[in-house]
Image (cartoon, rainbow, N blue to C red; front, top):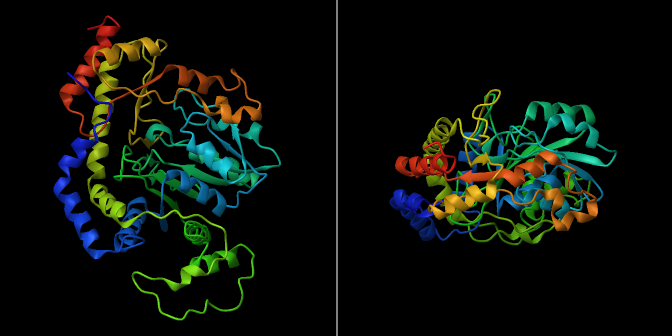
Amino acid sequence: MNVAFFDLERQYRALQTELETQVLGCMRDCLFIEGPSVKSLEAQLADYLHVRHAITCGNGTDALKIALRACGVQAGDEVITSPFTFFATAEAIAAVGATPVFVDIDPATLNINPALIEDAITPRTRALLPVDIFGLPAEMDAINEIAKRRGLVVVEDACQAIGADYHGRMAGTLGNAGCFSFYPTKNLAALGDGGMIVTDSDKIAILCRALKAHGSGKNGYRAAQLSGMDPGDGEMAVSSPASALYDPYKYYNFLVGDNSRLDSLQAAVLQVKLKHMPDFIRRRTLNAHRYTEALAGTPLRLPVTAPKGMTPCWHQYAVMASDKEALAAHLHKAHIGTGAFYPVPLHLQKVFCSLGYREGSLPAAERACRESVCLPIFPELMREEAEYVIHTIRTYYGLA
């Protein structure tokens, strides 16, 4: 049997008629940038997440960069984050001119350890950037309490966690702003890149909308006012009214921003998949519980299934194996795909060597990188495939 780590084709085939109907309608409208499907998706996601503002953008990395800027992070600041995450988390911090400061993780949850944050705060610290790794929310109550007491902002990296629940609130809505990715392998996945920022702050929302579109137009004008600039008296003078295909206001720029818009075709795709996401998460959860039950008693350290009132969305199912390389090789030989997330913790990446971290600086994150093996958990994984994965692992440990 061959078991893929992730099979994109199965989801496409299951939703093919819906997807192609929705995309064809979008193509016939010929409104490919900030069209009706984008505005509709933003409204649907704001409703799903119970948040005031949902601002789509080009990808999850841009979402992080834009959110950090909108929350006031700038050159010379420090932002505290986790070393056990995808590179984009720290890359976004560096891209806005700030310095990432890495704090070790809780070995049980693999998220940033709130008990270690306080000691990392300096006079230059501006923000905390926790990551909801593998679809499990970070300890946001403790993190927010520290931020409130120390006058910091919180940008939640929920790029892997859409649909996860934290004490009755949705992941991504727990800080000043939250960021999501719609990369094709995410729980809510586009057919290409896509991202989103959510916030309950009107000010942050206006800044995000301006920064994602060259700092231009009416949002740019309002953002400049909110930033303390003097954009001039009155609105912009235009010679022709805005239309569906032409916005004359976009040629008036007030901030240096980005070009980071979710195109309408991807928004059309995401509207279809959003309707199915509760079922996707239900099936991911079923696969996770199947693994947890059947792999109990093996030498593997299994993920936390329901910590402290949280409901993960199971973006990944990561087991910790002291013999990671041998186990992964055994699974590969059995034609089972696995993911090695992450082979190198961020504080040991070459690009950050100037920050002064060394091997042993953050031992829990380093151990997680040495031991983590992610098993197939995508929604369309069939029961017999999961059972084959389980049997192969138990056989490897002499338990079958």
